[in-house]
Length: 111
Image (cartoon, rainbow, N blue to C red; front, side, top):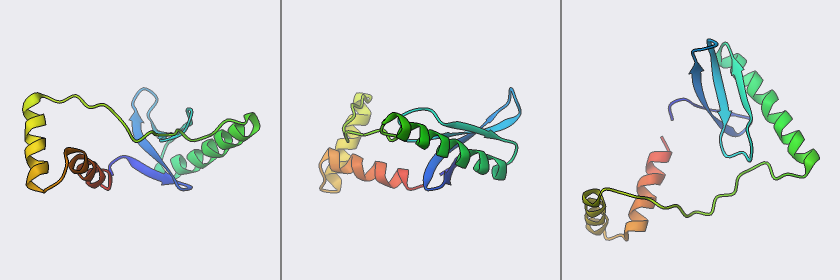
């Protein structure tokens, strides 16, 4: 995946903050914010590890679950023509629309 790094088993999105001229990382899937900055990828990884440790310690101290829970459900609104095309593509693979979309998302998320 572009702009995603892994620090201590946790994925974070990396972007450039042009206002301060630093790389910015933000952990994904946490139940709160744990962002971090660095001048290089190595510095970003070091700061990320520190930020993550502080976040996890604070959650433990306050008895807060550190990770978001996902239900596995979400609503999706599509253009009707795209909806029709997706149904046709799913049927062509002998799948339900839900199965087909799940497979497409799983494949895209592995990048």
